Each structure stands twice: as structure tokens, then as C-alpha cells.
Amino acid sequence: MTALNKYIQDNLPRFVEELIELLKIPSVSADSSHNADTARCAEAVRQSLLKAGCTHAEICPTPGHPIVYAEKIVDPALPTILTYGHYDVQPPDPLELWTSGPFEPVVKDDKIYARGSCDDKGQVFMHVKALESMLANGGLPCNVKFMIEGEEEVGSNNLGAFLRENKEKLKADIVLVSDTSMISMDTPSIETGLRGLAYMEVEVTGPNRDLHSGVYGGAVGNPITILAKMIASMHDENNHITIPGFYDDVLILSEAERVELNKAPFSLEEYKKDLNIDEVWGEKGYTTLERTGVRPTLELNGIWGGYTGEGAKTVLPSKASAKISMRLVPHQKSGQIAKLFREHFEKIAPPYVKVKVTEHHGGEPVVTPTDGIAYRAAAMAIEESFGKKPVPTRGGGSIPIVALFEEVLGLKTVLMGFGLDSDNIHSPNEHYGVLNFRKGIETIPLFFKNYSQLKSNNPS
Ligand code: BES
Ligand code: MN
Ligand code: MN
Image (cartoon, rainbow, N blue to C red; front, side):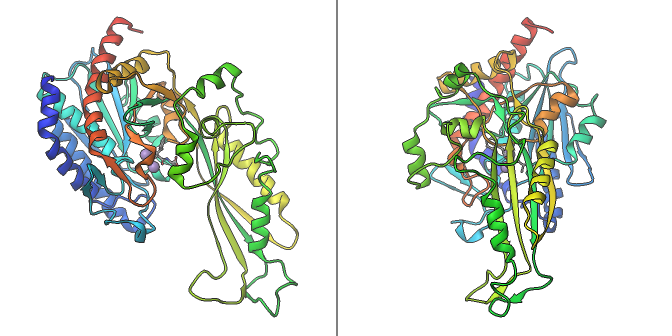
């Protein structure tokens, strides 16, 4: 065992304890009643980076939640890795489905249970502890900068401006992100793409007030019924999305690319079993891997209206609403898709209701290169620590800022994530394997070493 891995092994219990302290802070970015917690979490991340050996760490205020920036520059002539992650978390509800408190972390069956344990505090903390471990065992082979934000889970709305205003400070050779998942610990993989996102909210209004559903029912359009029909009409019988122009810019994969993508290890039987569904659903003509990796979607995230309390109340509600997200693939543009959605939704509204469409956040899809030295450095690092070559996969999730790293900073990104799809991110009982955490801490220094070596052999 290398001295570095011995250090990681010996200190792992303390690393987990320290992560647990971070996980106790309910940094829910979507909920403003947690603003003080979110700020406290930023400060805790800053302190952890200083403790790990950064020579500079600061809190950068934004109109929303603050960004933590830190660095350790060993030699300006060496390459620089910019590590990105987020310390904000998703709301923990529904609380009653958690077996332990979302912000009362516990280690059970070698997994750390808490909101944010995998997405993304646990993965950010691997980088903090990898830095500490490298510095305690011979030092860093290159420079490192950290940008850990507090608004990823609400669309990173203020991070684009931060990139534009801090190009010099953020100067680097590559962005390294651990905020994605692997197929399994036995089948390590690297995500090579993220989907974009256009997130909308719609409100359908019928009569000017809630009505008695007996006195008026049958004679006045019910906004819930109408919203349900409008939503249902947005997929056709083949589960294609019916918004005109929606697919116009979708990059169609070649047959060879499709064959390659479907080579990734995947068992439909296990997938169904894990989710307790008898059959999968999706766009006709595509496999499950294609449906989540390279095809766009339209999903309902929430729907409400009328009476949902205990017992029965006879009411014909005045309003019904829904939150709808569309996942996008190259070369769809979130602004254009939001516009097409709005025009379509307004057009299909029948005359007995009024509709209001509002836009939440958006983000652009990305594909990360597999032919550059950064991917090679990550693949070699994973092969060394997992004993197996990683499989490239196309992930279905979104990290809105990644497209802007390229656009604003001219930087490519490597998505070296160590989560598993079964970690319940965004869901009750989110957890992160202690082994995943440890493997991550071991793999990051290997990436640093490989990248620095490859970079010095291939300066560009
Ligand atoms: N870490 C996730 C994205 C992710 C998860 C990518 C798993 C690949 C595999 C990230 O925190 C996230 O949840 N992003 C949001 C987008 C955001 C704008 C709310 C998402 O994908 O829904
Ligand atoms: Mn995340
Ligand atoms: Mn997330």
C-alpha cells in the first residue's frame, strides 16, 4: 500500500466524522428560511479547505447564496486543476419517509445516511480530504483551485456572472467535478455527458373563485381536468413529445454511436426489479440507456390544485398548477425550448381557461471529450484504484454550470463522480457508501498525478 493510501486508511474514521459535521448543516438552497444555515455551511467549507492546506480561501457573496473559492498554488508554471462542486442540498421532504433525520447523519451498513451525503457534500469533501492527504504525503503535483457553490440545486443562477467577473482568478487547465454517478463499484464508469434543462411552471385558471362542485360542476371548465388533458396531450401514443419544433435541433446519433452507447453494462431486469415496476416506459424506438442518455424528455415534477386535505370537500377549484421540466440534449437550447413550450401551452389552452407560464431555471447540455488527456488521466486513475477500466456512459442528470465552463472560461470538464444511482439523491434516505467516499479520496490524487504527467508531455 502506498504511504498516501495508508494515510487515507488511517484517517478515514476522522474524515467521516468531519463529513458528518458538514452534513448536519441544513443548507437547503431552495428554502429561504435556511439562508443562515446555507451561509454557515459555506463558512464550514471554507474552514475545511484552509485546514486541508489551501493558502487562501474566501467567501464570495452573490445576490443569492455565496460561493466558496480557495486555492493552493505550488508553482505557477505547473498545470492547475479547478475543482467544482456544490454545498447546497435539495429539500429533504417527504420527511416521514426517512428512517433517520436528514440532517442527523448516521453510518449504517457502511453507508452515510443524510441529505447531501452523496449530492454533493460527500463528493466535495473527498476533494478536501484528497488535498489534505496529498499535502501530508509528498505534496501536490500541480496547482489546485476550488469553486464550491451554494446554488446548484436551484439552477446556479448567479454562477455565470461570477465566472465572467473572475476569469483571471479561475484560470486553470481543466475542471474536475465529482457530482455524478458510476454504474457500480464493480463496474466503474465515467459520465461523458450531461443533459440540459428547461424548467417551467404553469397555472391554469378557470372561474374567478372556488365553486361548489354540485352547484356549478358540469357547467364550468374544471382547471384540474383541463390541466390534466393539456399535460396528457404533450406526449403522443409513441411517447414522443408533441411540442412543435421540440426535436428540431436534437443531435441524432449514428448507428455506430448507438451500438457503442448500448454496450454499457445494463440489465433491464435488474432495473425494473430495483424500481418495483413491471415494465419500463419511454420514447418508442429507443433503449432505456438512450432514453436517459441521448434523448430529450418532458417530465411532470409536481401537480396541485383543489382540495388535498383530509376527508372530502366538494369543490370546483379556481386554479390548478404544475411544475414541468424538460431534459435537453445537444444541440437543443434551453431558451428556445422554453419559448416553444410557452407558445404551445398557450395555444392548446381551451377558451374556458386562462393560462400563465413562468420559466424557472435552465441549463445547456454538454458532452465531455473522451479523446483528451483529462479523460485519459481520469480513466487511468480509476483503473488504478478500482482495478478495472472505466466504461464511458451518458448520464441523464444536469449540472447547469458545466456548459459555461467551456463557454466563459474555455475549459473542458471531467466528470469523475463516485455516486451510485441507488444512493437516493433528491429522495428520502439519501446515502453514500463509506467505500465510495474512500475510493474517491484515493482516486483524486491519482488523477492529479496522471494529469500533471500527461500535461507536461503534451503541453498545449
Ligand atoms: N448532481 C446532480 C446531477 C447529476 C446526478 C448528474 C446524477 C448525473 C448523475 C445535480 O446536483 C442535480 O441534481 N442537478 C439538477 C439540476 C438543477 C438545475 C436542479 C438535476 O439534474 O435535476
Ligand atoms: Mn449535485
Ligand atoms: Mn442534485
